[in-house]
Structures are given as structure tokens and as C-alpha cells.
Length: 296
Image (tube, rainbow, N blue to C red; front, side, top):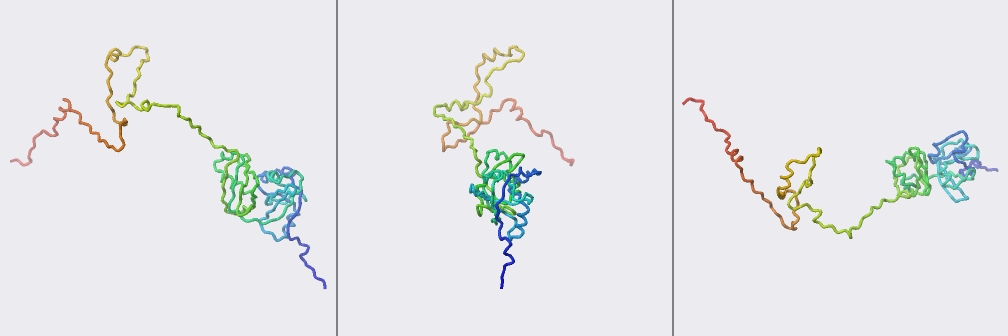
């Protein structure tokens, strides 16, 4: 008797080596959408291989550069590459320390769903963005997963910003497809807080009396005035000969002789009535005679 397994020729896992190139080497295509995301382009044979496997969806892959001992993770965007080749975003090739035509190992994996991630902008210019969390959330829609230690690139207002993935939870590599993830930002690289210079006033001694107003009242204007036509002011002689009038103490000036713990009640006497005010006080509201409607 002969026994055989009908599934012995069906592969159980995807783990192959490919020659990698950047997206700019993809002939006849200008794929800016690939550069802005975290997905790769693979050959059709890889799709045929993956469809015959019992893998979880969405398809996620572990990319390994064995020569430099560098690892990252990505999703797949399309299966249109030439056989034996894969096309990666430029920022991903930099993380893996790959050159054009280098060999890379790609393996299908299953990653946990992300719950938390922490990013560090690589330039203080990232602080110029009004709502960085919204910009990052919109950019991460082109990514399938995140790997701690990677430096990803996002584009906003035709400008590229790089962010280092400092931490991810619940693992060092997570899937960010249809997840509720909390995001935090670390201090950008090269950011320096403005240090205010505090001048030492040890050598400067200022008399407090100079800063205080005169206790006898505030004088609004002490200078002399001049006419625009060049003529002399009227009553200059009388004004110069007149004695200086002392301005009485005005309300609103603080009491600099105040002692803590005391309360003062200021009572102001009613001004004496002048002759004009006396005449006004003699006013009577009604001085006519009254009459009865009934004739007596």
C-alpha cells in the first residue's frame, strides 16, 4: 500500500528573497502615493503564492536585510512588479540600509493591532503645523503597520517631515489598519526653549521715593506751552509773578504712611454754602393759594 499527502506540494508559509529597488526605478510609473506610505509593490507570482496559503488578512510582511541586521514591516499595495523584484519607498530603503539592487528577505507575518504609538519629529519645523495629530492621522492612512525604531516620512503642504517611531504598543511592530490608537509626540530633535535673560539688579539701588507720586497730589502737566505762530503768550508776566499754587491732596493717591493692622475712616466736611447757594436754598416748591370746589 502506498500513502501520500495531497497537500504536500502546497507551501505553508511565504518566505522569499527578492531584489529590491526604490519606487523611482519603477518604469513608466510615477508613484508618489507609494513614497508617501508604508506599502511595497511585489510581483504577481507572490500573489499566486499567497492565495494558496492560510494567512491572515490584511497581508503584512516582515522585511529583513540580513547583511546589516535591519528589520522593518510593511503592507503590500499592488502586485505589478517584475518577477524577482520588489519596489520599496525610499525612506524604507534608508531604514534598512539598502542600495539599488540589494537582496531582501520578505516573510508574511501577523501583527497585533496598535493601541499606542509615540513619535519624535526629526526637525523643529514640525511645530509649525497647526494640528500635527490630524496631519499624522491623515498620513498614516497610507501605512499598514509601524515598527519601533523606524523613521517614517510624511508629506504636508509639499514638504516632507520625518518622524521616528519611538514606541508602539502592544508590541514592537503593530498593525494600524482599522484601529483606535493613542498618539503622543516627543520633543523634536534640535528644539531649544527660549531662555529669558534675567538682569541682576544688585548693583542698582533705586530710591522708592522717586517712583512714588508726590503726597500732596498728582500734577498732570508742569511744562510750559508755546504758541505755534511764534507770538508771546498772554499774561506771561502775571503768570510768572504769581506765587506757585499748591495743589491739595487728591483722592486716589495711596497712603504711604499706612501701617498694617490699622483701619482709617476718612470723613469729608460738607463745603460751606456761599451766597449763591443760599439764594438757591430759599426756593419753595409751591407758594400759591388753595381753593375749595365747594363755595362756602
